[in-house]
Amino acid sequence: GNSVTQMEGPVTLSEEAFLTINCTYTATGYPSLFWYVQYPGEGLQLLLKATKADDKGSNKGFEATYRKETTSFHLEKGSVQVSDSAVYFCALSDRGSGGGADGLTFGKGTHLIIQP
Amino acid sequence: DAGVIQSPRHEVTEMGQEVTLRCKPISGHDYLFWYRQTMMRGLELLIYFNNNVPIDDSGMPEDRFSAKMPNASFSTLKIQPSEPRDSAVYFCASSLALTGPSLANYGYTFGSGTRLTVV
Image 1 (cartoon, helix red, strand yellow):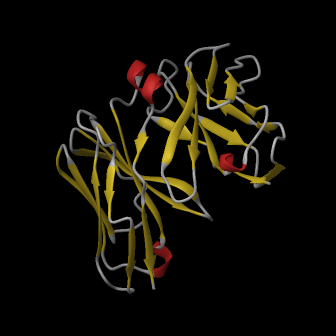
Image 2 (cartoon, helix red, strand yellow):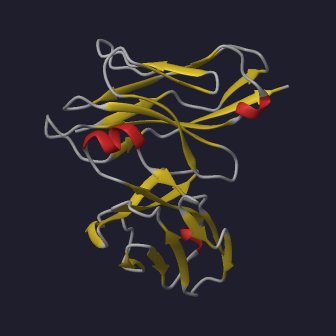
Image 3 (cartoon, rainbow over the protein chains, first blue to last red):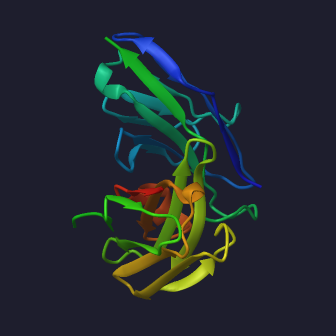
């Protein structure tokens, strides 16, 4: 079946630090990959996505590259801000070609805390 | 479109009372999902609908929970009777599809959630 594994949180960084949140996946087909962000008191919002191997998704200074060889989609940002404090979810959608489940499969989320 | 609309944003109720959460999906989205989020369990899928028909309710924790979708623009999640362990944030989400390019390109759209506290 499909699964997404994210690094455990919370992750605490100082403002302007470099951020990496690891995400690896298991899928039976050829998935698309997503990062969602949940700011305090809000719902999940789509942050970025990549639909095929070697694609790079980017938004708001965040980037993630679809690495098929390592089944990974790590989220990075060069210089974080206090306003980036949120919970980040990695997710995949299996295209069903390998018999995997339909819909999105989410990781457990990583809580990011940025200190001034 | 205003996005996925949930109401109320916050609900405080006493144990044993009935609670009804409401959701209006994005117009044209054929799929609607109800999720529950807690610190202990994270994000859990409770049930989802396709064209107003419940497809998979295996995540519904107990018979106290029920969900309906009487039309394409409205869904409810009801808890009767409520218990303190039901306290959580409940999210509704909608999507164009469950597979294929529509899902791959747009994913799900989530509402802002209902924070339920049962005392």
